[in-house]
Amino acid sequence: MLNIRKPAHPLTSPKKYNWTNLSSRELRIISQNTEIRNPTIIQKKISDQLLDVLGFYQYKGEQDFFIKIISSQDYKIQSIADEITAYLFDAGISVNLVKNGYPRKIIELNRWIYLYPLLYYNFNAKSLNELFLIGKEVGRMHRVMTDCPIKNDICNNGKNKNKLLRRQFKYIKLNKISPWFSQEAIELIKNFSYENYDVLEKYQQMVHGDLNFGNIIITKAQHPVIIDFEDSLVSWLNPIYDIAFVIQRFIFLNSSNVDKIQLASFFINGYKSKYKIAHDKGDLYSILKMISIRSLLILSTLDGEQATVYKSEIDKFIRLYKNTSENKLLIFKIEELF
Image (cartoon, helix red, strand yellow):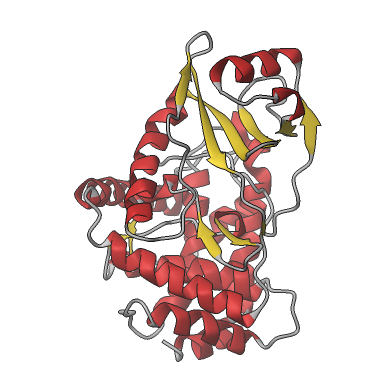
């Protein structure tokens, strides 16, 4: 179970969405399957799914909603992710819960429609206070996840995924890889020590698994909300994996003039205020590299027909790997904050 999904944000720093008016077909489908009173003001996110009802929508009316329509295949994964989200919500974690009465099946299309409260937010946390609050929320989430009712299923799913990726790692080192895959990515994987993979499997627990810019959003009240728990279904990993994701995206790519060490200290202090970090020296650097290696291993399992769809993702993780290597000394200084 690799759970490969086309990313909502193909770049490391997401851009604002562009929206368009609905087709008559989309308007009819949403009108028939929701209680929205004035669906004519709904807009759809512009994407490569524009000719299908699948996709993301927003409605700003008597109540503001974020709407998504997904396939039945994706519904199976989304259902478990919703179970995790509901558990975290009940435990007081800031998540965005689906509206009561949803999802609903669109019978004629074999699709599913979801309604969520529409959050007004910024993607990119820049202030020290925002990073401290993100650290607190991630720490609280990790603590609560240790008691998740389905953690045994997550453990089994995650271990199976890790086995599949370890096997793919060996295949690439033995030159057993599809010819379409990036030669530069192959060389990165080949030159990466197999033993480094062990770091991901120390101190394992359930984690989010994809804490990029798009999945931690900062509301207008400067409060972080964590969303999209689909990757949690297969993420039985060292919790530093989530921490490293935040450091990689919110700190290394931070465009403010604040010193990176100071940014990291606020995030890590926030985290430590809610959850204890178990780690060994060098773990952060290894896991930051593993984020890219693991993602490239997943992408290498796709067939050549999907190469153009995921090329930007492959290039992104090659860049992030190089960025990690260039920041090695900084990373070791950040790790001292643990």
